[in-house]
Length: 191
Image (cartoon, rainbow, N blue to C red):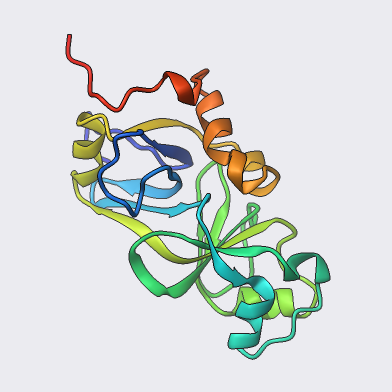
């Protein structure tokens, strides 16, 4: 990271009510990576009409873990929407998966099919969220959006990702900041 820049890795981005981009209206994004080259995150509160059972059927894998079958797949963002991303509990030093980003102080994000194969066999991470697509920002783009009051940021809480009902994730993320969603204005304030 360059001197004076911010690192929002392992934080939530919470869309402000006036968010013009419909991809992110009402969204909570978990930031997997934020460097001077850009940022990568996954929307954690926009389920799509596909369950994990449907997804496993499409990739021709059985799903032996019945507790996961009805779990929804999420819209992770407008980038690479045909690609799957698995956000899961910290994999430790070696997950054994081919393509895992270990998020400092946070979770793991795996994009290789072997994590699905592990889940298919009854193994794999205990807590996970699967998205199609991700959210990406080029160098300086996220900082610009933050400067225009597009997002609030707060340290991420894995309980909101894995243990909170989808419809409560936005308000619970705001509560981490002590903010009531009804108190937010769509207008940017200027002193």
